[in-house]
Image 1 (cartoon, rainbow, N blue to C red):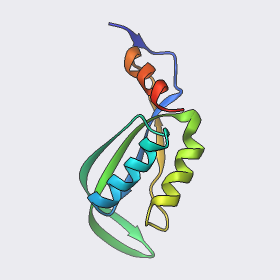
Image 2 (cartoon, rainbow, N blue to C red):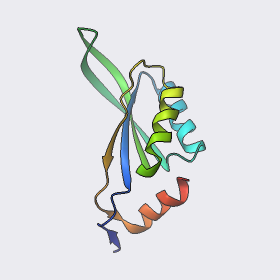
Image 3 (cartoon, rainbow, N blue to C red):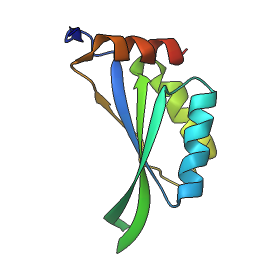
Amino acid sequence: METNTDNVQYGIVLVTAESRESAEAIAEALVESHLAACVSLTPVRSIYTWQGEVNRDDEIQLIIKTDLQRFDALEAKVRQVHPYEVPEIIALPIHAGFAPYLQWISEQVQ
């Protein structure tokens, strides 16, 4: 099995959205713009403080697989499409991964 443990150019970007429709619109914009190789969507329950008030909301978590060299463009696209005033857009590096999968990310993200 080929594993790449030396490259941290790849990452996961986490974004939450208010609805499945909003999440799918963001995901499609990122994939169509070649800023993400794949976006997985999963329901989450978020508890957070916003404008001094504790909120509890059902949201959709986007798990975005990308090349972090494109993070600035990815962030700009999310901000353009996302309805939230201050959306979650955080990147986590991938420190190790199956080399053919990481290569596929490279081929998809331009």
